[in-house]
Image (tube, rainbow, N blue to C red; front, side, top):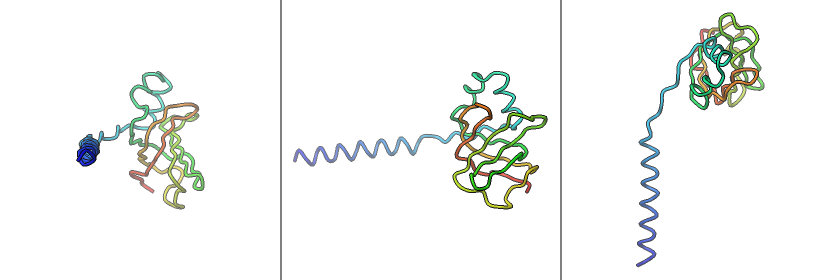
Length: 129
């Protein structure tokens, strides 16, 4: 009898935890232009970290460079030369999907800024290429 009560209690606990996870509302990604994102980190890195760090972003910009085998795309904003948004994809990027100079929107999780603003777990949200 005691084992049955313990088993039921464990099942109820697991069910409650699972329901809480399901109810957790998904926060929509923050939409930002690459130039604004870069500028935010250049002007006030701690403020930019507070606003963007560990949050999902949809970043619009121009493709500056592509490393298909490594799954990396660099995005530049208007007038931004040195600092870029470096986007890491889970796997290789399909040949021909993007070209340097394409306007693109990439969605990913912001990990802050070292030399570049870093996005992980990226997907191409929209491309003109």
